Length: 170
Image 1: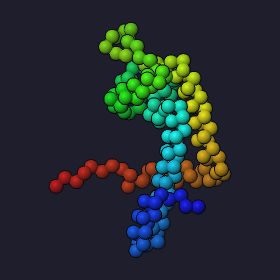
Image 2: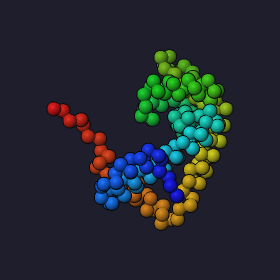
Image 3: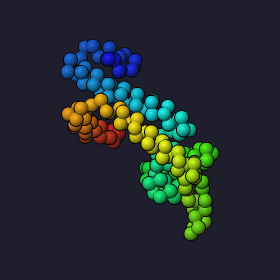
Image 4: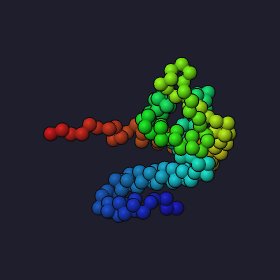
């Protein structure tokens, strides 16, 4: 089965003169990237059925887990995104009737964001559907394969090659 994207095939062809071990490492990395891209593509399509993006869905989950009420700044802080990004996501969610913005009764400079009843229903439905779908991706793996995958992902994630290096300054 070929899971590589066309761009990866082109890049691998350009590496025909490197050692087999290096080529294998590059191919494995490209397979990992291709699998992640496929998951992201399908995820986006599945969430779009509910008028959601991953960002909008995560906002709704964050509100749900916080008891349904947070300020835009609290959302931005919890999600490690900018308040500008939060504002854009909230605008879309409000337009679809999933959230409402109300003045904070203790500080009129702040807003409190809460899920509407429709938003609560949608986040619960999407969460259940999304969880089932994610489980279906992994369900074909044996316990040993799951453990090996966990260990491999951990090792890859911990690679010093993935540490951000400050740019060279000459």
